[in-house]
Length: 522
Image (cartoon, rainbow, N blue to C red; front, side):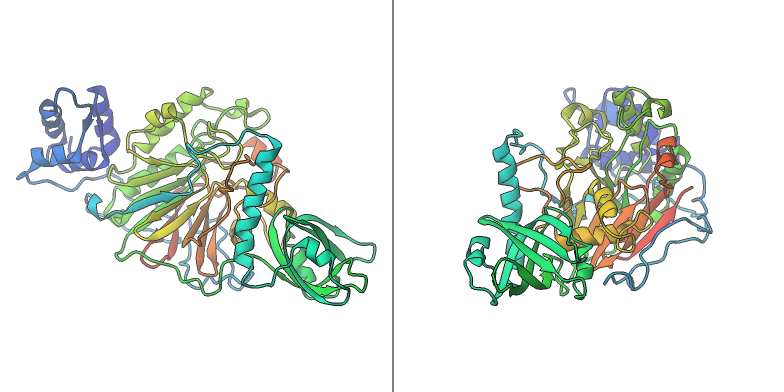
């Protein structure tokens, strides 16, 4: 069975009662006679073993001439000559897109060789910010006070170097006419009868009103502010000291001086999301073309696959969803997803977080999949973590967040500042606010914890989201923002809410340069 895919090898081993790690599968695929190699691996396995390891296979194959593993006998697909994509536009919103490679649209020549197994010893993966196993919230009022206080203190710390903060109660005692500066959480925003803007800021001591005059340059910034985010203001108190006439507004923001780290070798990561196995509109052919391409020599440098949620379509997520399902049982959906995941090379390092269609709690932060679902998706030993999580691969930190809050940001901000057609612009605002889901309420559900796991404490090199089913990427203050599209064609529900998805794209990031190339497989 020369040229056998990893999926067939994994299936064969599973039928014999064995699992296998990524290196073992890749080595078996590269053997001159994979069928014989599997037989020898199983025969030589210890009686109490349940997993075939790379070390075990290396010993069996030592001294044997091996061919590199090959994908299915088909050439990589041609790119769509007119893809529907939304790369960031040059000059948009302080974003720099000069280092971003264009979406590829040309044909790729057939490859004569296959993928050579990667060296797992060169990989370094670390995960931080995972809520899994740390959830303490009970839903009591005190829990909400705790999480919002934590948010305020941590984001205020990022603003204290820019303003000389005075507590609300201290400002209330100040004489009129003087200068004042305050850091607060946005309690209310409303327009006055004269067309000006009144922002109520709250800190741990009280609430103070700040007025932004409509003819000031900073009035445009008011449109970017959402409830519950933390900002700072500087201005002059009214004569009666009852209000602050605001001259400047500051956000926690990513420093302009941010210098991203890069890998010290040429290695790539594929960033995808929203696969939606179980939907009648799941793009199975596009997925298989993507998996086949990963087996080619052209994809040799792709060693990481990061999946930002919605592995399956789920059940009962939106009205009349059952009419659009090809698989109605949630566990069978995950079993089908696991089979599709087996199509990708076994030597890939895979990291997965859940999304709002997945079988985890809907409130964010979301813990990772439970043990039963982990068992179903165990074939490639994927690293499974919560939403959000920061994954550092070879020194490059990737903030993975499924992206439910993008709906709120796009709804609340003016169309020129955020839209579904340019999802990366909405992501810029989350980086500016240093929080992946600043607004409480609305469609967003936030779980009260002792710590706000949604604060962006450390600036990542890459910010990866999904959820909105649109492709978009760009840079904001040297942070690469990528929304990775989806693997599901337009459903009836999406059509009803005017979502035209970008299907079958896989953004590929060079970790040594942070350049991005979007490949299309439909």
